[in-house]
Structure formats: C-alpha cells, structure tokens
Image 1 (spheres, one colour):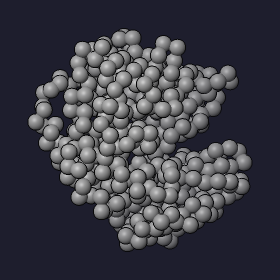
Image 2 (cartoon, one colour):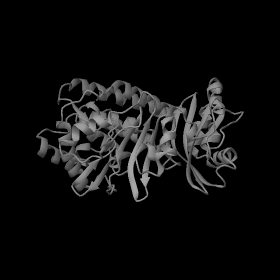
Image 3 (cartoon, rainbow, N blue to C red):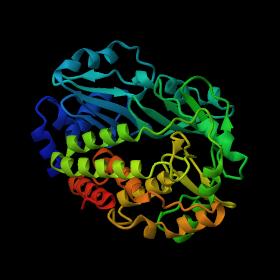
Image 4 (tube, rainbow, N blue to C red):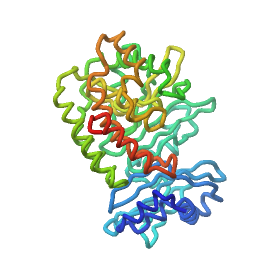
Length: 408
C-alpha cells in the first residue's frame, strides 16, 4: 500500500509506469521474491533504504532483503519508455553463482542483484573475494549501497572487522587517501589507509569506537570543534576539488521540485539569497580543505576524543561549511529546529574551534546552513525514514533554509 505522500507523487508522474510498483512495499516484495526465487530462498522483509528520482525519467532504489542466508542486496529501476533498451542490458550479462537472474517487466521495472551493477563492477571482487582486497578478510558485509553510485562494505576476518572498502562509480574516485595523508600528521584520529586493489576502490582500516547518539550533545560538539580547527589549519592538497556551490544549489532545488513542487519557489528564493550573501562576503575567511559531509554519523568516540570517518568529500571550501553540514544533519534527524540559529545550536563547537584556531567558525554560517539544508531537504524521501510523512519533513527543511537565508 502506498503512503499518502507516495500516492501524490505517483499521481503527478505520468511517464514512469512502474513508479507505484516500486514505492509500494508489498508489491515490491512480490516482484523481488519472483525474481530471486529459488536462488535466494524464502524472502522475509524487503525494504528500500535509498531512492534516486529523476522526474519523468527513472526511479532507482537500493533494496535490502532478509533471506534464509542472511541479508542480501539488490537494486530496482522503474524507467520511462526511452530507457527500455538501457534497462534490458543487465539481462544479457552473465549471472554469477549466488545471484539471481535479473527480471524486466513489461512495465519497465527492472529488478537485479547487486552483483550486476555494472557501474560498481569492482564491488564484485570486494564482495566475493574480500581476502584479495585485505589479507585475512573472509567476509564482506554491505554497510551502504547506492545503485550505480557507491558501495561501502565492512571486511571481516575470523576475529572481527579488519577494514572498510568503498567502491565509487567511474569518474567519482574520492580524495580520501590524500586527505588522510594531509591530516593524520596533525594529530587527527583517522582510519589508516590501506593499499587500493584498483581504480575506484578505497580501503581504510576499521576503527573501534562508539558513534555518538546525539549531535547536539555539548561534549560531542566541543571535541568536534577542536578536530575541525586542526583540519582547517592544514594546507590544501592538489587532489582536493573546489566547491561548485552554484551547481549544487541548482541540483538541490531541482530535486526538491521533483518530489514536492509546491516547495520549489521558496527553495529557489532561499538558494538565491544565500548565494548572494556568500558573494558579498567573498574572501572572508580564507578557504580551507573541509571534510565536506560532516555529521554525527561521520565521527566515533575513541580514547583520544573523536575520530573522523569518511573523507570522500573532502574539498576546498569555507571553514563554516563543515559546521553548516553538521547543523543540517541534526535538523534532518529532528534533533534541532531547521530554523534555529546555528550559532546557538553549535555553540560548544564554535567555542572550542576558536580556542584552538583563533578564528570564528560562524562567519557565513547562516547562508551556508541554508544551502546545506536545501541539499539535504529530499533525504526524508530518499532514505525512506520514516516512509510515511516525508513531504512534511521536506517542507520543514525548505522553510528552515528560507529562515537561514533571511527570506522567511
């Protein structure tokens, strides 16, 4: 059964025939069970943990299925008519042992196993032969899968976790190793970088630690501020790309328009106002290499304080971009109001940062927070958590961005 918000989206979309099939949990489970039988055995629960929607073109989903052999991963694509030939291509690919043969319905809904994701071809080696990637590894456990974009897997040995492998689609190799080399000498706690088994695969050591439960906890914020001060003081390295903020803002507004058209005008107004404010404050402060995707999910409590994880989006940007990203993550998690003053929410972070670095991290924080909120505004839809009521959460994040940009 479709949620009310999904039903509204289906009613607006007239080119993707199987959209309702992919968004309806019961119908989707039936399609996957039919495709995967008998290879995967009896299926239990099936859930969608990632969606990528291009209005009038396609809806791509990452699927997690409970099977008799444990958790298995697959992907599904509901496409418009012009994609028919592209959707049929996986049907001609060889199917490896343990994978099921892909199915393409007359309604252009493709269901296929992770192993047939051609854009993430190196992931096959990671999943099937983890010992070839990290000596001693005997099992690969998927932590995150974004079809045709990214695969993250934990590599376990007989005594426990050894490493984390990240497979990126062609052309999207991240500067994580360069960032680790640059920052590790500054006393920042980071996972060790392992030799890469090939292009588009990054491997880092597995860090033991505890993930903080609340990114508004003053103790967490204080420790993160100290780490950021060290990171931002490091000189830029050649592999760090420069931020293309205008491109990101345009993409965010388009994504919002696709899932919630009535929010587009306010989103566009907020993006324009935020960009204008950043232009007016150009050069203040000096640009730094930033984490680029900082949130409470990217840090661990460790004996020495907090460790930074996932450096894949390290880039040259304003230092406050990391604080803005953290604030937006807390707003999406509903631990703070998206319209609240970020300087108040992140107070301990800003104070500890200034104590180490001597600079004010809050410079341009509000317009950066506006753009960070817009970039995350579709996450309630994409991540399906919760499945019901995502439209209201999208709307609240857009309204919060408008407040941060000063247009609401």
